[in-house]
Each structure stands twice: as structure tokens, then as C-alpha cells.
Image (cartoon, rainbow, N blue to C red; front, side, top):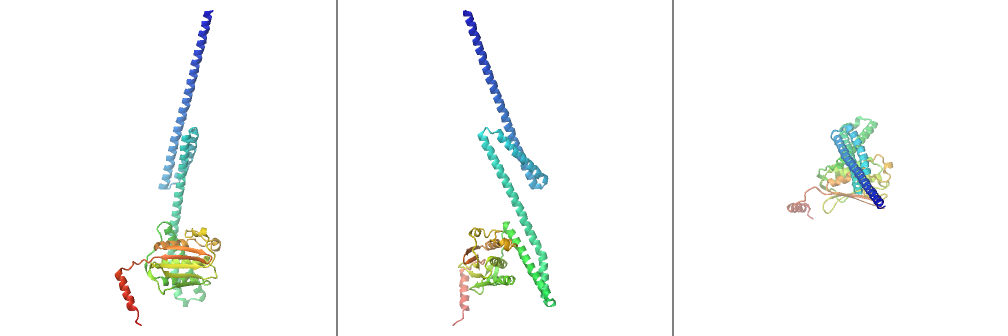
Length: 377
């Protein structure tokens, strides 16, 4: 009997040992399988990362090739590499979905890629815009050559007005005015392009009488706007100084044209000329009419910003006149401001005198000259 018990105990111990060994083997096999899956998963992640880097390099190379050589096939290569890159990033995110740290890195990678794409799109738009602006400047410059021929020919015909019939003289005058307007628009486009490309509007200061220059500009506007009243107010018969006469004339013409366009048609436009305490030329253009909206006033001197109803009332306007005014003021080292309320709108421009200030000896001599020129009473 005892021998049977011992045998049973030994058998049970053997079964337990077999069970323990089997369990240990199963755990070891499971661990090996788990480690094997992790190794394969890690390899997949590493291969996906390597593919992401490769595709990013291919996309960058194709993009650089297009920018340097301009080949259309490079664009197709770039687009394909970019699409493959997006798919591979998604696959990498799926592989790393159980790792929160890796998910954050992949999300950051996607954000950087999106920012890079947006940056490249912005650069491309800037390149296209610069090309368009340069093309406008070239077209405006080349347009002036035939326009000059038209203007000179029309002026020569008008010099022999007595040989022309009245209808012919009227037609030549119309040609002259239209060609002059086209020439002014071409110049405006060239100035706009130079300003937008960062070159600024060139201004060449020379000795001039500001009142005489402004009077001529206003007379030209009166001829083209016979039904409107344009007044000139100044407390001096002459305003001598050093400014660019062509730019001053252009500035006044733009401001008065803007005032005629948006002001009340039954009210005059007033141009005021004076000097401030520092000797700068002050030009004020006032028109009556509705006040400019505060929201528009903040962007009034930016290009292509036009007043309410301007697109329908004046569809041919370019919306760059006030931008040119601001750039002309800046070219003279000056400034422009606008005030608008129920009493009307006033644009005020300050243009510093480019002449150097006189030294003390010159001031004394000027005083002596003035004193000797005053007649005795």
C-alpha cells in the first residue's frame, strides 16, 4: 500500500513538473512571439521613417530642379513625391498609434510640412506677383514710345490750326487729350510698380514756384472738368522752394481728381497752399460730401482700396491714385493725412523744402538785402 502511495505521489509530482515546464515553455514562446512582433513593428517604423526622409528629399530635389531649370516634368515629380510623402506619413502615424510620444512628433511633422507647403505657395504667389508687376512696368514704358509720336504729331497739327477745318481741329484736340491721358496712366502704372517693388517713386528736387506749378495742374483739370469749380487759395503770390515740380503736379492732380470723383458735384473743390513753421510746403485739398467710413479710412492709402460705389460709378479707376500720393510725399520726406466728417473731406500733404537751411552769415545777408529793398517813407 505505501508503495502505491509513493508511486502516485511521484506521478503527481511528475505531472506538476511537466505542467510547470509546459507553462514556462508557453510563456517563453509567447514572450518570444511578442518580442518578435515588436522587432518586426520596430523595423516597419524604421523603414517608414526612412521612406519619409527619402520622399521628402525627392520632393525637395524636384522642387529645386523646377525653380532652377523650369522644367515641367520636375513639377510632376514634385507632386507625385508630395502625394507619396503624405500617404507615408499617414502610414507612419498608424504604425505609431500605440506610442503617444511618437504621435506628437508625427503631428509636429505634419504641421511643419503644412507650414512649409504654405510658405512655398506664398513664395510662388510673390514671384508671380512680382513678374506681373514687372510686366506692367515694361508695358507702360514701351507704351510711351508710340504715345510720344501721337502727342508730337497732334501738337504739330494744332500749330497749323488755320489749315484745318473746325471738325478736324476738334478731332485733333480730342486725340491730344486722349493720348495725354493714356500717357499719364502709363506713368502711373510705372510709378506704382516701382513703389510696390520697393524702389519707391523717384523725386528730383529743383528750384520751383509751387504756386505756379499747382496753378497749371488745376488749369488742366478745369479743362477736362468744365462743369466743376476748382478754387485755389494761397496767402502768397509765389511759394519758392526745392521740390520735384512734376511730382507736385501729379500729387495735386491725383488729389483733386479724387475730390471731384467723390465730392458733391454742386460744391467746389478747394486747393490751399501755404508754408508751415518749418518751411515745408503744405497742400490741402477739400471737398464737400459724405464722410469717408472709418473702416475704409484706415486703408485709404493702400492700392486698390476704393470708396463706396466707386466700382459702379467709375469702373475704369485703378484705385492707386492715393497710394501714389503717399509715395510722392514719402519721396520728399513728407507725409499725408486725411480728415473726414460731416463738413467734408480734407487731404493734407506736407512736403519739406529740399534746400539746405541758410547759415547764420547767409541769414544776416538776407536780412540786409530785405532791409535795403524796402523803400523809404
